[in-house]
Image (cartoon, rainbow over all chains, first blue to last red; front, side, top):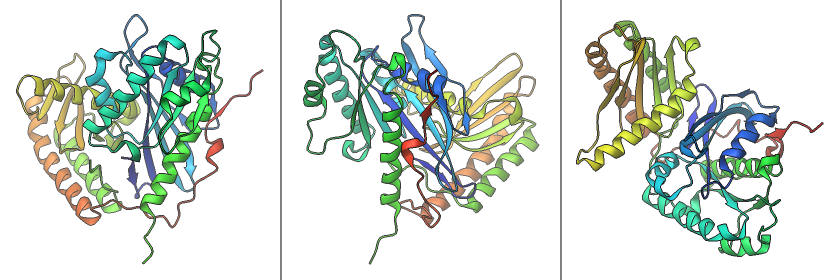
Length: 203
Length: 161
C-alpha cells in the first residue's frame, strides 16, 4: 500500500519486478538507472547479488518524479530473486507492493519456469493477504532477440488468458528496448487505481 | 492487509518531534521511522551523512528476514535488533505491524541507553499512528489537488546517439 504524506505532499509507491531466474529483472533496473532522464532525483542502484550474478535478496532503485501535479512522487523499484529456493525472500520483498512488472523469458525452454513463477506470484500475494485481482500488473516478454523466442501469441495464451487481459510488452532489456514502456504503464495503472479508490463516493 | 494510514500535518509533526526528542536525549546520529515495505515515513538527524532511502529499504529487508528466522525457531518475533560496528551501531525497534524505528548511533554510545530511550519513542509513535488509523479507517486522500500528469512520459530514456 502506497504511503501518502499529506503534510509534505509526498506519495511513495513500490513497484516490484517479478519473474523466473535469469529472466532480466535486474537488467531492467540497470537500464532504467543508466538511461532514465527527466526525473527529479535518481538514487543509487543497490544490488544484493551473489558472485554468479544472481540476485540474492533484491535490487533496489529509488527514483523521484512529478507524476501527480503538486505531489512529489517517490518510486521505489525492486526486483526479487527468481530462483525457486528464494521463495521466503520473494515474499519479504513483495510486502507493501503497489504494482508488479512480470518479466517473462521468451525462450521456448523457459515457458514452464514462466508459468511456475507466475503461479508462485499469485500464491505469495495470497500468503500476504493481497487479492491478486486488485494489484495492478503488466507483462513484459523479454529476450525477444534470441533465436528460440516463442511467439508472442503463445506467451499471451500462457500468461495472459484471464478474463481481464493486462497490458503486455515485448523487450530486449539488455539493449534497453521495451524497458520504459512497461514501467510507464504500471505507473499509470497504479496511479489510476489510487484515484479511483480514494475518490469521494457520490451519494 | 491494512497498510499505513494517510498522514496529516499533525501526525508528521508528532513523529518528527518524537524522533527529535530521542536524538536529543540519546545523542544518536539519525533516527528513521520506516514502513516495513521499505519507504521512509519520517527521518531526523545528521541526514547529510547517510543515504536514508537506501538504508530504509535494506533495513526493512533485514528486519523482515530476521523475523522470518524467528518464526522458524519458534519465536513470535524479535522486538529489537542490534548490530555493533566499529564507528556506528544500529538498533531496529519493532513499532507495530507496519512500522519500524531505525536508530544509527556512534559506536561509543551504550546500546542499553539507546534501547532505554527508544522505548518511549516507540510508544509515542505507535499512539500517533493509532490516532491516524482511527481518523481514516479505510484510508483516504485529499483529491482536490490531485491531477495526474501525462504518465506516458514520466520515465523517458535518453535519446540514442
